[in-house]
Image 1 (spheres, one colour):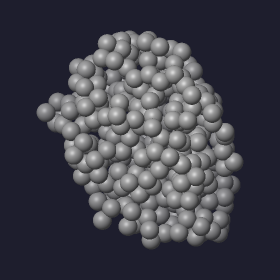
Image 2 (cartoon, helix red, strand yellow; image 1 turned 180 degrees about the vertical axis):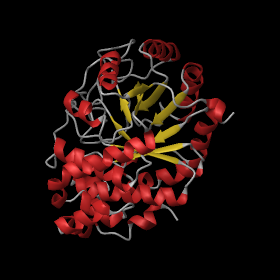
Image 3 (cartoon, helix red, strand yellow; image 1 turned 120 degrees about the horizontal axis):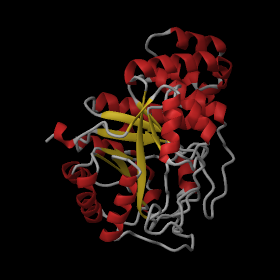
Image 4 (cartoon, one colour; image 1 turned 90 degrees about the vertical axis):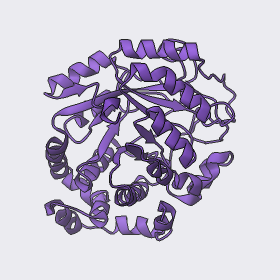
Length: 370
């Protein structure tokens, strides 16, 4: 059974009403449990939980220390291409944006690798737009072959692929694959993805099942917060996580919390999520699933990122560039979105260390499987 079958058992608007109906008593009951279920998670992301944010943060901090210690894993995104065949109303790479397109060549990839390694990173996240004729499985496999000698941990965030292609990525040495549904509201999804292969809602929805079947080590999930009602989207993302963990129990999981950011041709959302609400959501995830990795990008402000170190985050990017060649080859190429925290990796390392936490550049080696 794929997640599509689980998804179809729920109605978006009924879930939204259920979240809104939660009371203080529901929140209190969830907070005293040693293990909570999806209904308790619903209470913790509801408006009724906001007055309990301090208690949620304390519990989240305690659980994170128990499972992960006082560590923050660091990674760098490496954008290989901004070519894309999809029209997405929230993305700077959208096909209808008249921008200069760029896909890195072999020599340019190696220049970017050298620049990222000089910053100290050993974990790289490869990112592209969705242009199947240009950035396809053969391009990815070639890029990984070039990059693999330099990094212990390679993650990938590209267009949805077939199960056999994910198996090829796994065999090539990819550790984790990230795929975000953007929004789990099928009606809204059609509006913000009017054209391109990405407009197929259910093909994307079942992508994580195909990744799981490929035996990849880790799957990353997330919703683009602010694209629709963040609480309802977060319920469905948690439901998705629950489904995958039961089906692919040997696989690790991460959840990311991207918020819509300014970008070329993008109008910002009418459903924003505040810093306080984002903290609520992160703490709710940690209480719901103490073992899931929670990742925070440089989309967020310095202040928010500094505070979340102790409250639930386990993985964070630093010194990020969201444009192909942004580290060394072509710093002026178009960004996918604007980052907020522009500090260098070394500056952020100092912040982590001052809080008594250990910045971790390497937590995986291919020798574990070879």
